[in-house]
Amino acid sequence: MSLKVLFWAKPEQWPLYEPALREEFNRRGIPVDLVNETDDPASIEYIIYAPTGDNDDLSPFINVRLIQSLWAGPDKLIANPTLTQPLARMVDRGLREGMVDYVVGNVLRHHLNTDKFAQAKPGEWLQQNVPPLARNRVVGMLGLGELGMACARAVYRHGFKVMGWSRSPKADADILCFDGAAGLNTVLRSSDILVLLTPHTAETENLINAETLAVMRKGTSIINPGRGALIDDTALLDALNSGHISQATLDVFRTEPLPADHPYWAHPNVLVTPHIASETRVDSAVEIAVENIRRAENDETPRFLVNRSRSY
Ligand code: NDP
Image 1: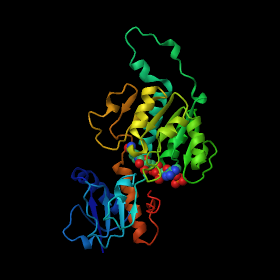
Image 2 (image 1 turned 30 degrees about the vertical axis):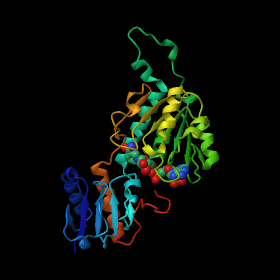
Image 3 (image 1 turned 90 degrees about the horizontal axis):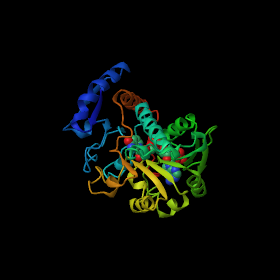
């Protein structure tokens, strides 16, 4: 019997994923009936999914054993009230490698103060701005999960001191790990460059606000590839305008695309990137998706299941 698998994502994804998924199912010896639309939702056993809008109705898929998301962040998916099926988020090496590149690249950009030289007027010879060495800078990593820990290690390998913060306690030979409210303050107080890589949950909403910004040292910079709602935008703009926060590189926003009249666009100390920090890559994602379907089919626990009670 073939497994009935629905691929549900934006139409342009189907030609990219279909051949790769068929090849991977074939390679694993799993017979599959793979479709990208259905008029018989009750026949579908697995969904490989990336939301196509705000109104995707998952309720007719009453026999689905697993929804395998193509996205790393589960926030938008679990906000869908029609989702009742088990949900696995995407953790693949493509996403991880992309995020490491984004974080290391922008940490170095902040560290070297590259934007100051890029903005210099002709003849402005800013020789007094020699940056300190990486080993004299502290990078704070809020979120030590699949992406945050990989980024923390990469930044550490580059020579920075790295302090990380997570919900549950962690231990690592190289990264100084903290958790809880007191731990957060320690990381905020100590960081020169702060990277946000927690998911968006009720607990992390507005994690960066007037109060937490005030804990940070003058001149701290912020990189946010996590989620827009982690930041109280008004508080960050106030802190940027006063010079308390030196610069921000922001990839994610409460409204995406970021509206053209949003003050972040025009701010001289803000770099807006259009949610490109990292993306699921077809070749590595199909391996995860097919392996998770194989696990579910064999009564093994799929990997990276979203814990609905903690929202990530
Ligand atoms: P994980 O679930 O693997 O890791 C999340 C980390 O955040 C964990 O360390 C977790 O702690 C920590 N965390 C969660 N809630 C809290 C809290 N209340 N207090 C302290 N720490 C908390 O997620 P990933 O690393 O895979 O991804 C992180 C986020 O990155 C995604 O949710 C998504 O929003 C974003 N992302 C952005 C992309 C982009 O292109 N901009 C691409 C991909 C992802 P603990 O370890 O204790 O569980």
